[in-house]
Length: 156
Length: 156
Image 1 (cartoon, one colour):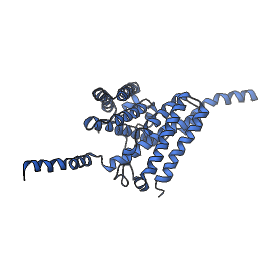
Image 2 (cartoon, helix red, strand yellow):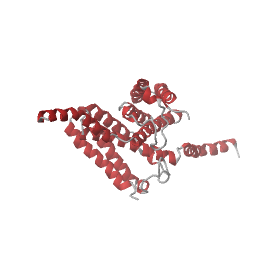
Image 3 (cartoon, each protein chain N blue to C red):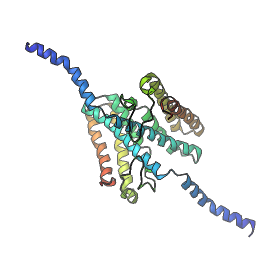
């Protein structure tokens, strides 16, 4: 075999080596599940702060900071939290994600997009500080949470 | 006892009732610990995305979105994650927080302030997209993580 042929074969193998490296380097499913559970638990914490403010003593600063965090998380690109292989297993606890989240990815992406959109809108409204507007938009945001839980969270 | 006296006593008790209500309404320590563990795990996820981009194929969009999320979380007011009573106990796992975090709160607030400041600066620099500047600022940010772990995370 000529040296040029060897070089050709080696070059042809490069993308494969790259893929193997990416697989070897990819986080383990249990780590992905832990991040997924943590991220949505963080969203739940920030959401709870807004709800407490709307139900009790309204605190504009508290609400706008929490809304900014939810929006930045929702818009940070969450697809990595649904990496292949993270459909079953244990993170901080057994995942309750439905298999549909991995088979019907266009619908998952659609609902994640709605979540990101309504979170960004709440962030915009919260910065202005109108309590009634915040309450309405908070309702729209939590509907996107529920939609995803309804379609992609196992009920068992 | 005259009616006016009874009213006086009742009015005097109102702030106490308010405090009792706040205590009853406050999230349980195990919930606070769960939120604390989740929030910093989320920061770890977003930080890992930036590190992967700096160590491998640089992706400006990935980095700027992750930096925005870290900054919004760091600046969302984290004191609620260190509520009294959450010094010991189990969230997703036993807390590894040191008792010093609850006795030396000015130092905790100082380190949390440094974290918030450097995260906001990384967000600013990441939006511009200069890889070398991002790398330097990312180093400054992770130093603030380490400073807090050094001083407020138990080593046992």
